[in-house]
Length: 189
Image (cartoon, rainbow, N blue to C red; front, side):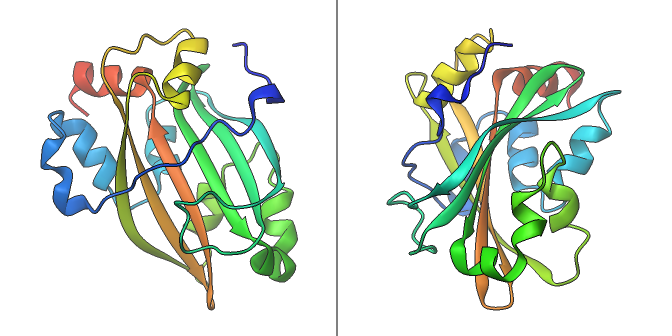
């Protein structure tokens, strides 16, 4: 897999919408995965022998214009969630500076550990609503999938969720790559 930090960040300014408008998603399995409220990490781990987090990059940066809940410097982390060596999900986490000041080690020293394990096992972290997005076949994320030797024939779909810790919010975005969608279609899961 040829992925370098030279292209970090891979994410882009994204137009998110509410799940009530999810009727445009034709693939029922993908729609179920996008709207699932539990841990994506746990769900993915149950489908493979070897689950791996590949860090594409992480750094302090300014939030993108569409990240409206965060108006301060953020710790951005972009990763690939891989099942048996194949990237299935591109994920981006945005942690505001104020939350880093409060819980820095929990986020900045994850390394290759999945963030999902922290988010869904800590009682102080409260998941918020899910939002959805569609990525055209010419988007930066589609180009990332192509660089991973995954054929792009349909738009990519992703979800974003805000998590609260006290009065602070962090954001996690997860975009399903073609390998994940192909598996869903093939196995009806």
